[in-house]
Image 1 (cartoon, rainbow, N blue to C red):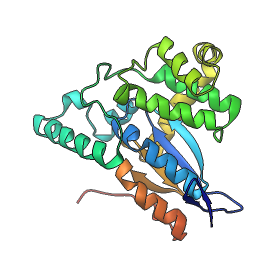
Image 2: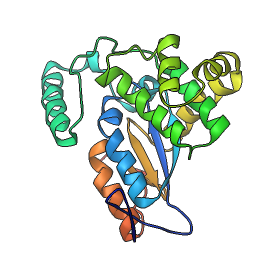
Image 3: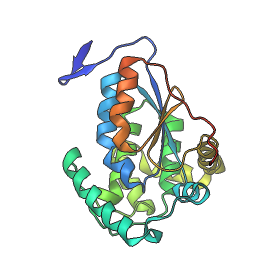
Length: 229
């Protein structure tokens, strides 16, 4: 095992591959974002970013948008937000100005960047994080074309060019729709949702479990058909 910046790094011939279903407006995807990046560096993993329409996913899986949830659930959500803000040591606005927002255009810019540079690009990785922190840490409007260009530029990408692609190429819109349907077929019901060797991990509080399976190389546990009763 080698070390990078004091962090142990697993070096393998075939790096582990993590599929990451998320949305730029997902609170918990943001809360786990930097921790996830640390895991990726430590395990030398390859991330396949899969942005999805989270509200649609909620609508077909029994979930509710935040504003439609019961008051007691909302109250506990604020407690958890404050706990995880301390645990992850991250900035977090409890009631951000631009939430909810439509992240579709930003998702398509990310997909355009991946198409151009690949999932392994450090700039793509940084844009993915910046898209997540926009709403929850910086109170930016992730639906705004101007904001999206700014975030892409900050990540070292050509924001203007990627925005033009995202607005003009129907292929990118179809890709986001395809990923959302793919998530449904794989029984995804929220975000973040990570898959490693087809084993699902829902929620950023499962990142330690995800890291464990990569390091231990244990056999994965996969979804089984569940029937009520």
